[in-house]
Amino acid sequence: MFIREASGAGSGPLLIFENQPELMKPEAVAELMGVSIKTIYDWRYRQKQRKVPMGLFVKFNRLLYLRTEVLKQWILSQNPSLQ
Image 1 (cartoon, rainbow, N blue to C red):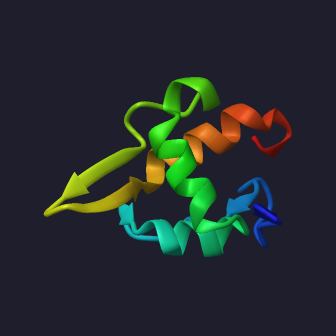
Image 2: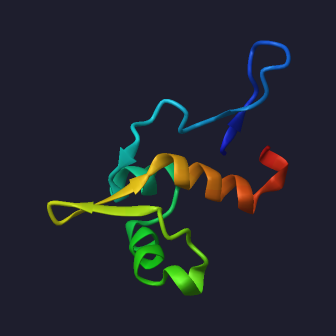
């Protein structure tokens, strides 16, 4: 789900969120990852229990966003075979 092979030799796998913006709305992340929006908000409100990185979420004008780079690093740390 998170990998497709690169066309060039030696360039390694490409992640699906490589061309995504720096900040993403929870709805977009849920759709991209194939999880429910409730799961995203569960990560937000139970960060310590779910071992979610503290820098993943940011709020602007009462709206919640997720940092794409932190999300990518978290997924790679959970799945060493993707690296």
